[in-house]
Amino acid sequence: MKMNHEISLGLSLLTLWLLLSGLYTALLVSLGLASVVLVVYLANRMDVVDREGHPFHLKLMSIFGYWAWLLKEIVLANLDVSRRILHPDLPISPSIVRIQCTQPDDLGKVIYANSITLTPGTVSLEVDERGIEVHALSKEAAETLKKGEMDRRVTEMSTL
Amino acid sequence: MIITATTIAIVIAMAIALVRAYLGPTTYDRILAVNLFGTITVLFISMFGFMTGRPDFLDIALVYALINFIATIAVLKFFEYGDLSPGRTPEQERDI
Amino acid sequence: MNILAELLAYACLVSGAFFVIVGAIGVIRMPEFYTRLHAASVTETLGSILVIAGLVLLAGFSLVSVKLLMVLLFILFTSCTAVHALAKAAIHGGLMPETDDDD
Image (cartoon, rainbow over all chains, first blue to last red; front, side):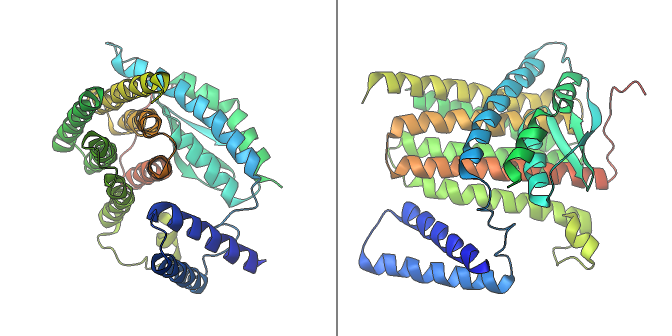
């Protein structure tokens, strides 16, 4: 199992290196290969090559589906927050709400909390076993989050 | 033409972010403003590369984005614990 | 270059610059720290998405676009983590958010 993660880490590092370099001579590619091997060795020694550090068990297609949905949500939330910023009266009503999260593992919770933070209008303050404490810019944003559609989508993606 | 206009707008946004860093009032406001300034700087470097026709600047933007993040986390850790050494207890290590 | 792609790129750049400035104005206008976090994330999400999207459309299909998308990915990944760390550090540092709650 660990071997799979090492191979996957090496391949993604190699792709990254080839894309960033843009120069494909024998010397440079072999130097790149050497550094990839070194990094995989060091990551192995640091014990960070595992299911959490390199989560290829998430379904790839569902990640892109989720990103597309998240992008739509981000655009809508941005328009709302921009309207509030530019409104002369500054119509904000900050509140703190507690959101239930139904993800089985830590990785799912991290994805959910980061998605909440990435959406303007809501920032996750504290994450623990049972739920997430969220600071919302407006009551509407908090209500949208409480409906739990994002929670459902993340859970769907992070369970096999 | 439009690229130049966008670059100028981004520079104006950088100046506004610096005003918040100057006004404060709390330390966290200043860190937020500097973090925002860094993000806008990444955009500025990318725009500048296109403006002068040298896309090599993108490598610098990439590195700047990563350093900006590490700097924010490092300053936060410094203000919370007073030094940058690894956490003395597992609780502290988990906190940041 | 395709004239349509170019027009779309300029539209993206102009609206991206608009959102970058709106976010910066929000950081000045908002009354306290936790509300400023929301304003800053306008710049960091839609502002950078639109500016980078405009540049990708200008660059066309090449290694430059790949690097631009990587810059965008790093901005999105790091900004939400940094904002969360900032909010958490502020809570631990004793800065309490003002809320409009009735209870």
